Image 1 (cartoon, rainbow, N blue to C red):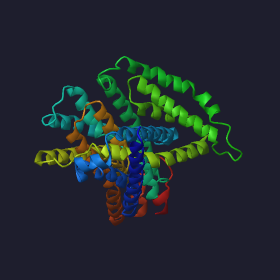
Image 2 (image 1 turned 90 degrees about the vertical axis):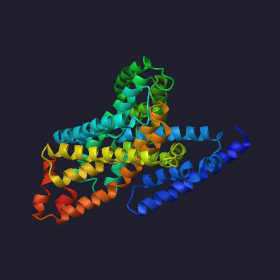
Image 3 (image 1 turned 135 degrees about the vertical axis):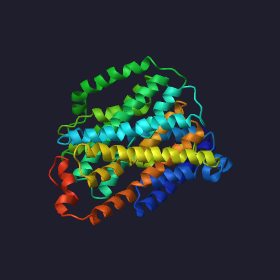
Image 4 (image 1 turned 135 degrees about the horizontal axis):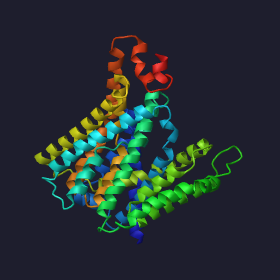
Amino acid sequence: MTSQNIQWLFLDLALIFVLARALGAVAARVGQPPVVGEILAGVLLGPSLLGAAPAGRLFPTDVRPFLSALANIGVALFMFTVGLELEHRALRGRTRVTAGAALGSTLVPFALGLGLAFYLLRGHPHDQRTAFVVFVGLSVSVTAFPVLARILTDRGLARTDTGGLALATAAVVDVVAWSALAAVQAAVGGPGGQGHWRAALLLPFIAALVLLRPVLRRALGPAGPDGALTSRAFAVAVTGALLSSAATEAMGMHYIFGAFLFGAALPREGSDRIREELAGRTEQLTALLLPVYFVVAGLKVDLRGVGAQGIVELLAILAVAIGGKFCGTYVGARSQGLAGGPSATLAALMNTRGLTELVILGVGMELGLLDGPLYSLMVVMALVTTAMTGPLLSLIDRRDRRRPGPPAQRASGEAAAGRPLSGRAADA
């Protein structure tokens, strides 16, 4: 690495941090999750706005591998946090409604996505048609669990029954999505078409993580004098996440699966405060590194050549992604007795895709399942579906407030979730 490369690396990192922070703050001021502004920053720094030549001068080819390395570490830690924040107890008391909503939220957009994939094949022919079709179906079925959790907190819904149901449903959808993506990668064989047999090692690896949970519990403790997370425990957790990432990458699978599985395998019993602090410290690292990932992803987005056909394809992608997710979730929740208002709120929340969608699209690019133009359109879909969540929730809330009937009747949907009323429903 030359001195000039080091200079450009530091300059690029400074630019990324400043622009991501600024646009993230702007997004927050207009009621959007900061991740919307950060993703937009990545797109704006790419060729879509600056053009290929200016973007190339701003982010020299020799420096991009180092940015990609930092981005990969950020995504690995992000996926570790996703696995860590999956709360197994969230399903208790609401299994039936969660199952109905999760099935609708996954199967309906996936089925519509299969049809969308056959339509897209006309303009994006592919040798691995089956893998392409399944991947497109998967890409419109995903929900961003971490972004959803942040939206719930910002809007005061985190402690309501609808919020708890949304987290439980998103957790199930996330597990299904990552499992399906692992299966797709195993079928494709990873970059270069290799790794089919090594993918079979994933199941023994998962079993080993489960068996190691008592060891992990001891490794993360004892806690500090006030029950807080120690520096040693934090180092053990991050090291384990990185080693787990390396293990799945060596199996021919993507490193994100290893980080996710390690976070999900960490013990839950009696370690709530430690897990909360561990997630908080890890998020401090990802807050710096994920904007680098957005730029690396944004450098692959080029919307300059989108013509009439590209606009039609984008509208089709948005229609399937939004309509399939909203209608599937709504019908699934209603089929289990949840009232219309909470079902609509849940459906709007499940449309959030955020960074999770970008990670999946990045895997699709690495596997050769997406070409540049289609990848660009899918990134736009991720931005639109995430940005529309807040306004859609406000619209549903205003509609519910105008709806005639006693407050108890409007709150009946919360009771259908199988838990005592809380939050806004209890106040009503």
